[in-house]
Image: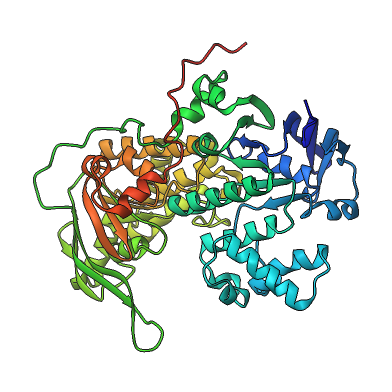
Length: 542
């Protein structure tokens, strides 16, 4: 049997923590053969990114390899200088980073950034360099590659930026590509296209792939073998089919159970219809923005739907479909260009003064990103208390009681009240955001991609919390998402948006089981992990 292309043997990595060192990778071993796909799976903080940074010699300041070996093509590169590693990176080993928004230089053109790796490693004249760069952009499926050469990153969509990063990573046909959460920020259909592209390029050149992901569904679809990490240690490893069909560790079983899939059971059955008018009525909503020349850009085009009280209505679609514009209009942050919106019986176009203030108490918004939606300078207590200060002048003791009560209700320990957001995990921060939205006891909660930035296990916890809070408080939810698997678990009814128009809507069962529109069928087909086998009972751990 030939030696593996990459062999990591008993690797330890630590970071400086004041005068001490904190170990974050504990004796990890794994290997990858030429042409093989190995998925490195785990939640945030499991050590995935630290491990791959150690492999390519790009640990952040304070990071250090304390022991073990990293053998590439038989040579231990763990102690190599940055100068020696520079010759290896790009040509033999390349990285597709996680965030396409921050991984490209905003002041350099796409052509300059793709061409740079060719210029550094290949002796090409100006005309040859331009031609080779154009070929790379065409190979990764970018439309109008000649136009893209002169554009800047902000002029490209997220999926287009990720294709540029793939072009850079594959430019020199490396032996190993490390893809660090390459699609976690993308819509499911774009995610599928990007992963298909990586697969095609890998097969054509015989490249090995180390796929870093928190999503076992993605790993199930793409990997030959899976290595599961938790807290910097390997929990499980083996052929993908074996790990997924008969996981040996309770942690892997939990990850499998938490994957939002079409086969997963609904969190609850649709509640019986309640008497009274709909909680939300949207009638032929139109929202235009100034466009190039005299023609406006129409973000929402004649959208209509209703939401029954006490139910969850999902608005689904890819980036640019009009989801966020719609909910901004519903919560009163945007004025419709045409149409009408009624929330809890109030016509938003007529609201002024005290009635507008009363309306804002009835409907609250939970934003997508728990890392940017909380003020880092405030304590958790101050964050949750702030709506009470703005809307309800009550005594300090009463405010403190209500804050403590809602924080406890969303499953956070009272000891976190004096801490700041930086001390909390992503799931804890999202619970804080939900507590802040609920402290005024609204009737309607609007959740804008509120679980899309979370690991699958934390995501499942938040979905269960939302379900319990809805049953307890008779809340109405507007749930905005690009992920139909998540919608399948929590929603009662759904509207599918494309280019600002509703292409399909109805009960979740009808839309998912009998989708009429090709776009809806494409969204459903793009959900990763649909071929996951049912996990077997977990064996007792020693």
